[in-house]
Length: 286
Length: 182
Image: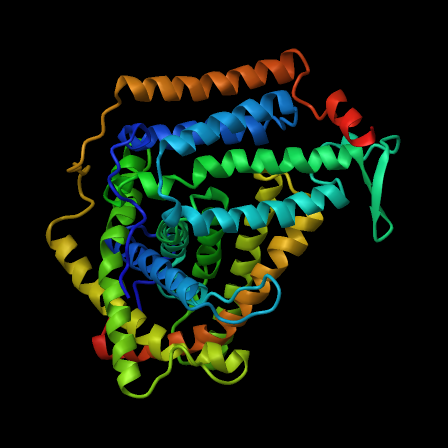
């Protein structure tokens, strides 16, 4: 069992971006869609296409991302989409319009045109946000998470905790593998845990306890080493340097501009609320 | 067991926060490879018991950082993206039980174990409630979907795992701490 990061150097535009840019751009889009409660397809659809473009520009191989995409797709379609289609809840009250034509009934629950359009909107809206979140582990080097958060204003200690956690990971994964092998040599069957649910969970203890306890012992040694080097007595310097390039300013500017435009449209012109377009109404009602 | 200062944030908290986060990430990832059978959309994540143990043993900052960063690591390892609200929810799940760290003296004593499991359950409820309710804003889902589809399955799975594994972890830790002498 080998811990492998999803990150690989790919030499793409997205990967050349400063990691802070990815986080800031994603925050702008999520805030625009969620805080401002944007439901209008004329805004949601262009943002979805923009997210999709950036996602494709990351050039992540299908075999790498297939599992994540299937998981997200099932979650969005079956939990969020079906809920929107049947209940119409989760959005503005105008979705549950009593005058909206009924398309069909599911177990006595009427599925109206506005509910159907809302479900589509909801799926597209969530995918817009997910397509920005998914590429992050694939495109940002795990070694620079600590530096990234430090440069985004997080304290030295918290950033260093993050940095240290990423460094500990291969060690603990190795410890887990060694423990698993040692327990198997004693007859422990990881793949065939027998008994009821509680017994199965309890039988994970021979794996979890040794690794966790060993880590607490390791921790004391690391604390001693860090204290001897006077950790935390003065501001830290960071080995990795991050520097914004023109492309970063462009992407951050784009994200901020999208957020401001959404604010102006929503609060200045009242555009962005939920509407059922005529073409959809005609298409589904004939 | 430790210096009993609940809100201190020094080298010890940084190191154990990092260790807790790495363990939470590794165990989350391992149970993705070997999923435990469950009903419906309830999943059992033994990593949660480890997270709550770190909160109980080392305090609220360690629990918060272990959950916050550990969930980010788990997402990074499995490749599911980055979802800040679930990371903050995991952080709260570790932080709340950390509030009783200073009041625990004997990790082998039954009343203290019961107290830790109780606070762990509270942490799970608070953390998962935060994550599920913020999905209403980030995902646009309604309250019933947040409660039925997200909150309830997460709480059931995590509470079962915590009730079983946290006492074992605490008793094992009491032995290790006694041998280490600090």
